[in-house]
Image (cartoon, rainbow, N blue to C red; front, side):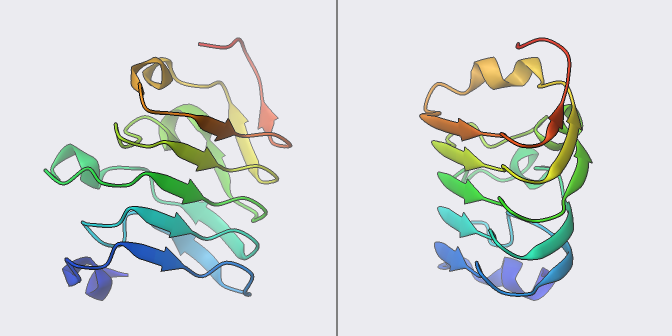
Length: 123
C-alpha cells in the first residue's frame, strides 16, 4: 500500500467483501478516518505503528472482521490510534491477552474481538 500513503485527502477506504489476501495495513493513508477490510482473506495486519509519528491521528472506524488474521492481540493493539471510536476484529485468529493500552482510549465506543482465541484477564 505505499503508494496510497501519499493520498493525504483520502478519508474513507472500503474494500470489504472481496477476496483480498496477504497482509494489510489499516493506516494506508495519513488522513484516513474510515477503514473497512472485513470479509476478505487477509492473514496478517500490520500493527498500528504509523500513529507514533503521524500528527493527524484521524482513524475513527476500523473493521477487519471475518478474515484469517493471525496475530498476538497485545502486539497488534499496542499503538491503536488514540481517537479510535469503533474497532471490529471478530472471527479471526487473534490470540493472547488484551493490552493495558486499551484503557487509554477515551473515545472508544465499540470494540469487538469476539470469536478469536483470546486468553488471560481483561485489562
